[in-house]
Image 1 (cartoon, rainbow, N blue to C red):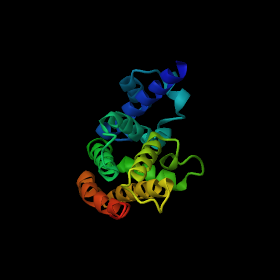
Image 2: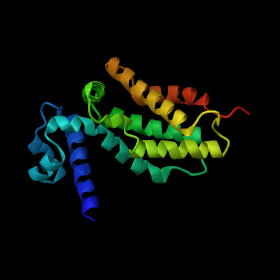
Image 3: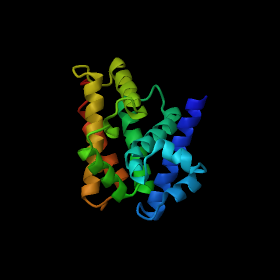
Length: 196
């Protein structure tokens, strides 16, 4: 039970931090603001994070929370491509509405230079587990190609999704990420459909 409570505390801190980063900006958000918003303590904060900068790598936690929230909405009988398009649309809508461009860009830049854990590539994340499940099910039902492994397809999807986010950052957020993803992701995923 202590492990689950700890996970909930960390998730509350992460959620509060990213909400405040979006509303107030990264520079204007203090650790005290995060502790107050998350209804935790400074001790809890420093148990999980060395400081505010350490939270930059935690955006993947926020994304995984979104996937956990979406999991019950996924129809197990739905087409795999449609399911992946749905997940992408929901994630990109969340980014459009609650993740600042500056912070997403900081996350990408920090992942490029870090020598330690690369959160965006962590295969133990909910994100990758869900992708593997959807792709594996799509392959077993004859919806997705079988000449590629589940890992190859899931990895290509994740790479394309990161590429769309990275391009959005490079473009200074001049367009809606969710609308652009809704146009591009279905075209990309058609290449993984099993030919009739």
